Image 1 (cartoon, rainbow, N blue to C red):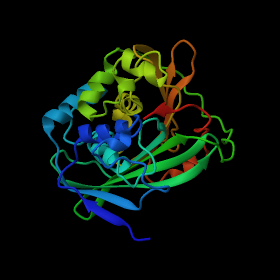
Image 2: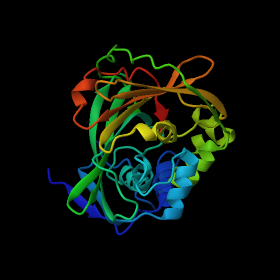
Image 3: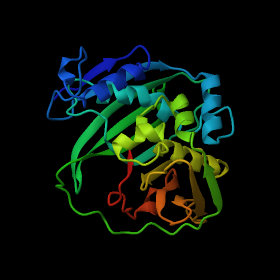
Image 4: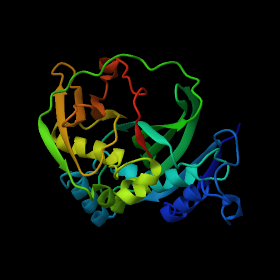
Length: 314
């Protein structure tokens, strides 16, 4: 099958993407004058490209403040996630996509920083999707993102999401995550979802207010999983090497406001940093992850039990 490549002059409108996303799950959606997702049984062999992407320093500053990063002359490792978000929504709301993004559960996110990315660099983005893979609770798809400076790939990301349905996969691997002791307490304000939405563009109702989250089964608004990942990495940014992969599994959603604990543990031989964000009262994990320096992939040959938990709705 030939891949269809679609070039976008700039990151598309998130508002239009949300109109399609939520339009696809309301009654009489077919009457809307929009090419809604749900037009195919398989994932489209489609690649979206943004050939020129520059950094707005005011936006970067706002993102760093919300997530806790120190402003530097290089991008925080998670920043390109939010720059790619409009492209992700455009892909998942394409008319050929088999279902819309509403209700997807974010299971894992892995980022590889090939080298630090200067804030003044001009980048190009590529986004595509693979799957649908069997899972005990349905099927998964994986969004792939690649950022390049000229011909050099400098940053990549993979987000794996669950589409709930009839389970067809094998049970999750029972290997436990190393126990990371808590070292800090986080007070997460109730407006965290709205503040992160303002800089990320991700205004999914489950992140904004209790009233908008309740129709989706949550007693209160929940923090974005990618905010939790970013805030955790901001806490250890002084330990991050120039080239590394950071892989996280989202477990229990963070109900806002919240009090959570954070801890990290470094293997002195390999330089691998394991970290975790947990509920302060119960100790259950919101997020677990590892930072693996480039060339040390064998050090994390253990597999994590990432699929047995609920994950974080997208």
